[in-house]
Length: 258
Ligand code: CAA
Image (cartoon, rainbow, N blue to C red; front, side, top):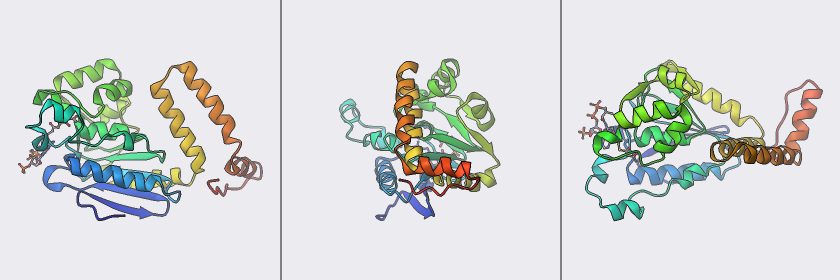
């Protein structure tokens, strides 16, 4: 890994962790941070030795949004031409499962980044919100599209139009968050979940992640056609044979990720 200044990276077994690290700005997503994040995530994604990525921030903030001070005086053209921030497609197209472990503030671009991950585990201190309306703008990293898909139109509209924050318990009840854990256990719980995921067959994980993405982006009929093909394709892997034989032989599978 190259030297990064806005993030920390760590690998333990088949799990990689990326920690957003701009404590002086509550991990606000500056263009430099976003570039480093996408670069590191893509490097882990290209490594078949990694089966799950955990993305986290600090106890106080996962990320308090896009960097307001860097954006404040930008023009329409600079923003529209994408001269400030790199495209998020590099992050959205990761094939390795990504868990967002969110403690503290996940606001604006921070909430949107958490929603780009496959699922969110939240500390009981987490606070989610899309406060862009208070700045005279609207969500810009996918929030107007992903939040209604995650929690439904009524709640998403209320949050985006008022800018109010939602606590961890409400976020779990609304379907934004997979699970809430005590703050002190956030990283351990995320690591345990990531290890469990990373122990599965990598080709099966890629296919399952892709099928879940298709579910967000297509009609039911298209999604079911995709799943049918992907399910059949899984039978071309050695891991499918190993997984099913291991079940029949009453032993744990030894996946080789082939
Ligand atoms: N951008 C730049 N700097 C930020 C920031 C952001 N999004 N959020 C916090 N900071 C900075 C603060 O300016 C402050 O810096 P200084 O010490 O140099 O003044 C430092 O981080 C600590 O923040 P606070 O003193 O404000 O901490 P607090 O505990 O009093 O408040 C907070 C915490 C409620 C999260 C508050 O910082 C806040 O409201 N932040 C902005 C949240 C926001 O509006 N996010 C949306 C950004 S726009 C966006 O994300 C667009 C998009 O969709 C792409």
